[in-house]
Image (cartoon, rainbow, N blue to C red):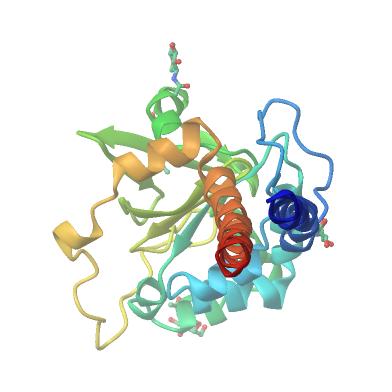
Length: 263
Ligand SMILES: *[C@@H]1O[C@H](CO)[C@@H](O)[C@H](O)[C@H]1NC(C)=O
Ligand SMILES: *[C@@H]1O[C@H](CO)[C@@H](O)[C@H](O)[C@H]1NC(C)=O
Ligand SMILES: *[C@@H]1O[C@H](CO)[C@@H](O)[C@H](O)[C@H]1NC(C)=O
Ligand SMILES: *[C@@H]1O[C@H](CO)[C@@H](O)[C@H](O)[C@H]1NC(C)=O
């Protein structure tokens, strides 16, 4: 009996030693954890969000991402996103939004103008969907493109509209909203009057109706949860890590149990 207990104790010890090692391999060392987040001990999730990677898998946002990369604005956005104290809010038009306009609308722009257009699609600050209600009282709101380039925000029965000179898309969905990065999808490109003196013409064969109604409705629950607490992403990725570790632990415990039985 004594030796059985000893074997079992050894097995349990093995599990206890294995756990931290697993935890280390499953979570990369955290860069300067934010002081305000009461992160659970085992897996502090990294706050680094790779925008290019995120945009390439969400969406489809390929047109916008291609423009960001071509102009290097992706670097500007990424370095702002890396600034976890302030963060960034990006309005990302879907591929269909670009396809709805004549190609020359964008190819006619100089590279500086194209850069400005992209910067116009962001605020150099993180805003959750819930915060837009307050932000709308500050209209017009400055964008990342600087002072003449402003947007007006309106909150209409829970739907948030983003008003530029030639378009007024509703936020179609919240793609990502965990401080410091907020990404919201739009069905239209934002078109400031400083770049477009008249309304840009539609493409000859317009893409299927951009406003597709109910399926595009923002999910306020997701936005609120992700935005205000700033903990959504953290807790989910932490949960993944914890899940992986405890699953392995269960396996080891099961093995220990078998040893006991065999004995
Ligand atoms: C953002 O942070 C990541 C990870 O720390 C780093 O690899 C990357 O170079 C940074 N990018 C910019 C543009 O600051
Ligand atoms: C782009 O420039 C060409 C040549 O100047 C012009 O004919 C065309 O209308 C412009 N397209 C748009 C969308 O402004
Ligand atoms: C909005 O502003 C009110 C006061 O003007 C404040 O009490 C509330 O917390 C703010 N909400 C957000 C989401 O910032
Ligand atoms: C935003 O609203 C202000 C007045 O509140 C108006 O002067 C301005 O033209 C609007 N800007 C846009 C882009 O709609």
